[in-house]
Length: 172
Image (cartoon, rainbow, N blue to C red):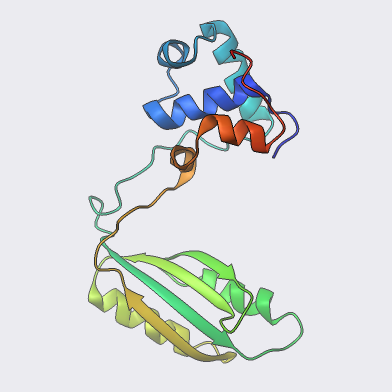
């Protein structure tokens, strides 16, 4: 965790995640932290690179990216192959996440796609990478849970998050 975070910063971040806004009045209501302090700390979190942008999270289904494909990729082992092949995989249209993994599978990829035609192009793009030996892709039938961006914090209990990082809730 970033060493510049303290209990108030964590509370602010959790409030943003829970209330889905960076409105200082709403964060103040949620945390009890004065609005001027919230504003100041938000600026500091941006300057420190903890908050990386002001973009809104999207409902990917609503913007036409309703097909989720999860792919496992096995590649030819060679020095530096994970970077070289990983970058080629990351450049494929529709691939949103690329993970180099331990175990039998070299890479796990997640793509949000618009249509079955795009899935077909995705497979063709995999086949065009010489170092790839084999792939296995799966369609997601329904999404039970997904957390991205600031919303990821909703998956954690604030008190245990603070404790795991050696911080305590100053209001206790």
